[in-house]
Image (tube, rainbow, N blue to C red):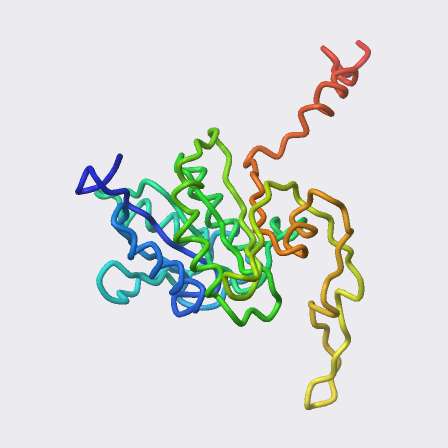
Length: 263
């Protein structure tokens, strides 16, 4: 374990909503209140939603001191974890990476776009147990249930051993503790995309496009992250960094050739 005190675990907290986001403050407060953890926060300096696993390669990154144990990075969520591991915490690496609490759900195919999930995935790629947390409402209003859930259940979740290359994506219903029925371990749901791009006109009368459109709808399939959250349960979805379709890989072996030209 990598910490100054062998009795505590060093937790790196990041997100994609930025260093000043309410969800990050809730997660930070909860973890700091737990005696078995110490915290370093390294988060984007501003909003980075839907940045996926992008790295900043065409402009410089800057580290901004935000107080004891708190830093902002002028980059993406992936940048923040990379900078934390390679620079800020190089001599005092964390044991765990927590990302969130995101303002809005990260379910189904949206995990591919999610900066919240990307920050956790970057932690996984450094070999650390990593977890992404989201408040599953498009306009979240009450983090109290999420905070109480984390206080009570996070130690059990962190105690469950993760396989190499895996992470856990966690979506929590919006509302007070009474709004949360329980916990379900789920698979990713499937989002129905419609009217994703809308046509707009600027004040000068020039047309432009806006990605967003109507709120998403979801396939209602039992056992998915969406269906469980809709029923009031916290959704725990294990994910893999390895995107290989192993079953199809074996089936496609019939396409292998020792040579591809007739000579």
